[in-house]
Length: 155
Image (cartoon, rainbow, N blue to C red; front, side, top):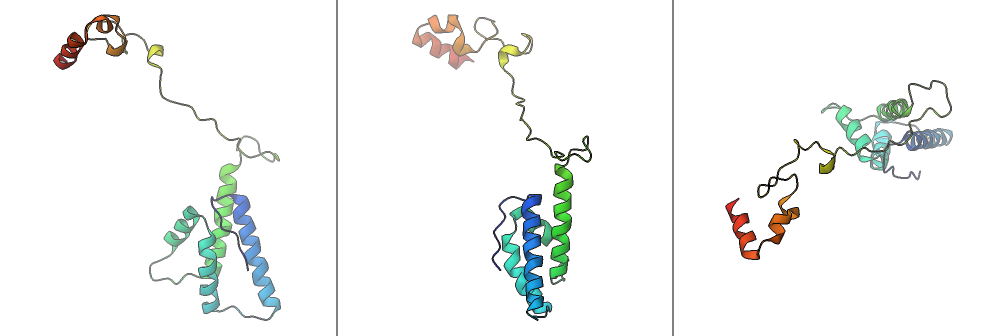
């Protein structure tokens, strides 16, 4: 039983893990090894570290404080988690399509370029009253260093 660690929860990786677990359990059954509470706990201790952090956190938070985790509960959790991730990835506008997954979203920046703002929204230069930063002010830049220093200290 060699299971690869899942880095990020994906339906494909969870399905692969679930299939490998079930395949291993069938192999143990063929070899006439019986499952019991102890074997379930041992298997869970092998399998839990293979989950991504988010899935493991969700599984452990689903347990009651006094409950000893059961392998069947873990398998049911993996099945449900897989279904949830698949349903989130599916595009609701294209039902039954093979390409029913969302395309990676392009992120939109909400930062604005100050020049694109209306002049009323931009800050005024307190030296000349223009709509620019003090460091871009021609009046400020033409002053002597001592005068610039006194302007900065006064504001």
